[in-house]
Length: 356
Image 1: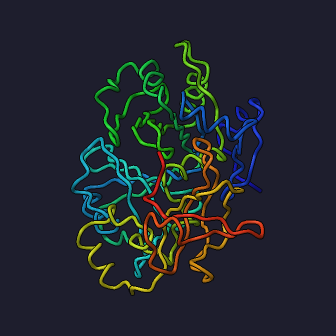
Image 2 (image 1 turned 60 degrees about the vertical axis):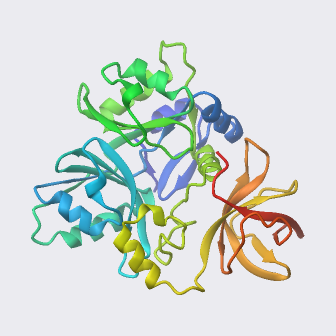
């Protein structure tokens, strides 16, 4: 039986079409993935992301301890800041990618993917040992809401008047008091557009969802499902765990070495054979059906890899996506590579990731 978001009844009332995602029944769309995608790019999209994990780490040694087990340097993370990171296995493969929010000097919120909660929690608990660290897994008991789009700041400023959002930079956060629980308000997101994420308890979260959706600020806020969340992140060039990241691929192979600390990055590179596959981003150069997971990519007559995520960009109409490639590819070579879709090959080129 699927897990249900605390906002499930709200989604039903709004006419959501549901899908199973990592064991959760979550909205796929509310009528049109395309329209919901464009709402985010042009106005405001509201997402329920309560399927994501919520793991609180605290204690006198929490900073030093977390720094030992995550891939990038926590010393660079100030209080009221967040950053993207990885939890790696002994071979450098990705157990999960996650966002770390530093709420106070020795208090952190770690947000793993829905599919990675158990693996992350089990791994971290196994690493605590004698360290003065406390781990609280509140996954499933936290409402997480993403407010994304070019008008998101105006909406959030009208709701959270105690925060000056003009001074809240990307990856900054504030913790504010609510009626029943504190709320973590962060300028983070997974769409490529400006936006914010809020984490709080169920009572506070349900009230906030209704306030955002039915605001009296003259701002239209449109509910969006996981379908548009996927096309938005592909346009932005953001990976999805299970597609572009897994326990067999290192962040270096995934093209995400920027998010790994210098010493660890060097060690991963030194231990990485040159012939291992890597993740690359592509753009189809002809009008074509949507590229889907598993479609083959060729260099001449030789298959060099398969699509891991793909779609037609709602913004440009181009076929775009990620592929796991087992050859050295060249960026912007327009006559070298093809993708096989529905018994036909279409020209593509590999480009820097993201079109937004």
